[in-house]
Image (cartoon, rainbow, N blue to C red; front, side, top):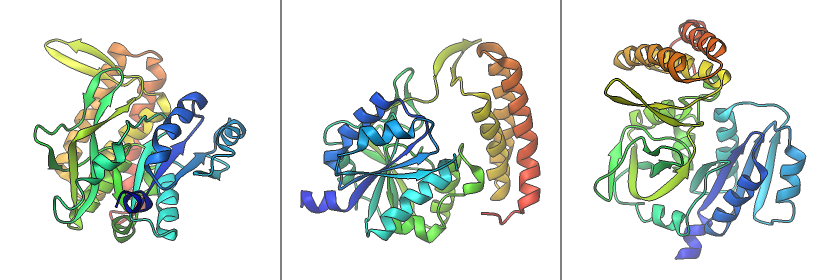
Length: 290
């Protein structure tokens, strides 16, 4: 039974200029829990070192792009690999995600707990600030969204709903995918255990008046896509409440960048440009774009 469970799932890891020691630890932690580890490298400057570190490991296969095609396109390439090789599930991992012993087997115990499960996600624990996102007080619960890393995805559901929206490139790719998955009648299950050690940017906790503030310290490049996609994906799906929230989030992103982050001018410029481009991008592509 265990062998069949392992055979049905592989790990898909997207890399971009990874810390080589961290990547090696990530692969070592997961390789015995899955059938294979498929790395998709997104145009890393240190790709030759990545290949050297993985060469000789029969469980690891490296797929490559000569340039950064974005997280959405990379995930689609990894999922396509699974579809081609008749896998049922893909475990999606970031290059620095470390899975505990028995991690995959524990996630697989939730298969069949609910009808039409498309994603099974762990509880995410940021190494700097603690638990982030949803938490489950009971052994599991159904949620509206989850982040990509650490979750297992049904390959047939990915194919049915049309994969990830590559036009979004990076940020909110997972949330937009979750929306379409649920709209197609599938569920997202969040497990109380296992937990996944993860790094959300270079996160730090601050206090603003009486509130705790989580500051991710993302680069100006990332802030552009965060603010752009805060606008684009709600407009794409006519989610007007989420669009209001996206505008509020962008405004707050400007405030917290000015208060707590370095390189303020460049980051704020990127946020404002992305904010504007979210609207422009929607009207350019049309509401049915994918």
